Length: 335
Image 1 (cartoon, one colour):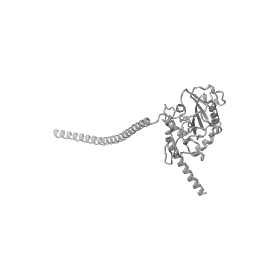
Image 2: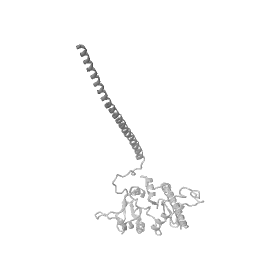
Image 3: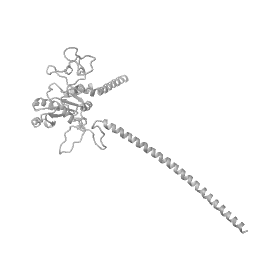
Image 4: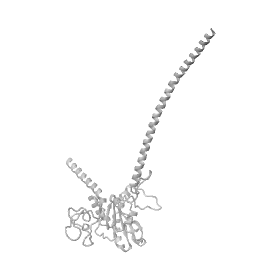
């Protein structure tokens, strides 16, 4: 009887142990399942974040490579300015050394110079230079003199001396000066840049009228015509015509030199401007400035390439003129 009771009690203990193990196991399973679900979703979430970061990193690497390529191919000085810069251009306006800076009022803007006249000068051409400077100052041009003989003080007897900008470096050409002192961002406020030699007569030249003509004709690069009775004409296209205000080509069927006809498409039959008195628009000068190399002296050969800096702007002008004409026709029809 004792053995039977002992065996029964032992069996009860085993049953209770198995029940407690089962209940414990049943309690662990949901917790483990929940943990697995949490781990699964966490893994998916972090995997997605990792993929996004990896993709972003690859895009940054690709952008960096593209930026490096762009920076290598980009012209020097054309990089974007840092944030906070007030202005990315300047001008040749003189500033008083001690006075407070002048505010740009409406009156000042109306009287501000809109064109620039620059010229390489020497003291031997003093009288001619005086006439040129007076002519352009009277038309409210900014005047800049490049002294290739290094002499500046001997110009003090002219009343306009303190109203022009003097740059003196001995034995340099006007193209050397222009490359170093007429950067496009410095002269960006001027509509036209006149870059002339010093030995030109201007008795019958009117700067304001000339600017109005080239502006109305959309000429990006031009020069005043020469009077063949008073000047030596090397190319017939530079001689003054009597039938119109401007001409863009010349017709020359005989004589010495290159023949020019209606099929001519290259200088000096068309698209030709001599280097003694060129006039550049703001847009054309930005192109020409980059064409001027550091060792350029006489600009021989540059005149054959200037057309590249005017073609695109001329196309834009012609398109604008066509649109204006169509708008005018529509306006006339509507009225």
